[in-house]
Image 1 (tube, one colour):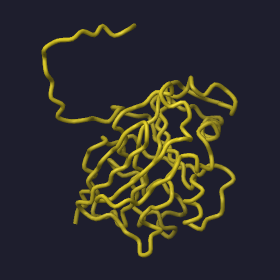
Image 2 (tube, helix red, strand yellow):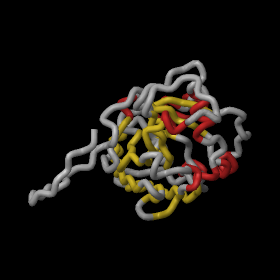
Image 3 (cartoon, one colour):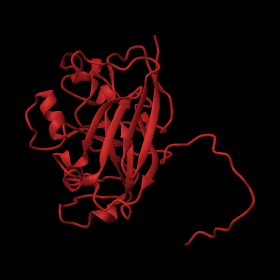
Image 4 (tube, helix red, strand yellow):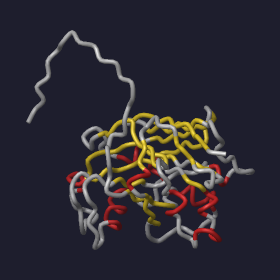
Length: 238
């Protein structure tokens, strides 16, 4: 039903901007999905999307401090375009009407502890390094597909303390959103509210020479055109 809106003389003060989603069933991450990022990592081009998951408790707000356990070292950022599923989806095929399954788009940071992503500690599994509480801030808003007709035409920028680290068009994605959803929904139900992080572009701290790991108090800002900006301060326990 339509909203019943009317003008009043009351004034409200916004004290906190919350995450656009109060909870999620699961968060899927796609690794190595920007061509320039694959080049900087010097990894082979994958034939299928590289998939990992983040649990519901990794969700955080767009302006929350990111609390980092002292056991998490070599902290990194990954600015990402995120897709939110709005309707249960299984067996999607490229060419199907994707609009009916997407609630909208938002900005995300796939916060990562590279220490726990190293092969000798992870067994080549990405998930654990990225699954700690509040390691997935998203926001500041959820933008409908009516306002973003082509998500491959957006510009993503990441800064750390004002220094630009990432700046790439989403046209650099290796696997586009229909291909990702087809892969994830193969024999699997994607529940409404699921967040899909579509990958990060080049410029992460891990591949800088030397690596520029995040430190306590660092402010990470990630902005995507037509969506907005999130800003999170790293609170790293010593």
